[in-house]
Image (tube, rainbow, N blue to C red; front, side):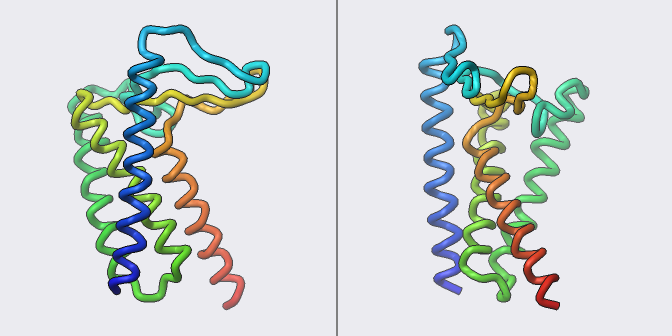
Length: 161
């Protein structure tokens, strides 16, 4: 149990530090400046505040509804997921790492919402031509990496049965 808590905790702590540091840098060096672009616009840095969820979903909802969903319900989910991650004894180290990534991304973006009037700092975008990702941040990458790892192990476990 100690190893599990340590792995989830250290993963979350490091990931939150990296995310908040990159958001600080994005605010310091991108806010009010022109977009930076590399490799023929494949990788783009641009400052944005996202008041919605993933890829801006829900950004046009009334502020009270957004706050309820993106702060209130996300808080409940993160608390529940934390309890699940800590109590589930069947998870291996990689699954615990994945849980730490999901939790770190969720808590870091929640911290942004609380400190930025409901908005999250986003600054990265990738793509080719008109086929592009939305604008995202390191916390979003942590969540996606964690979810992909959890889905991979869920699929692998189903395949063994």
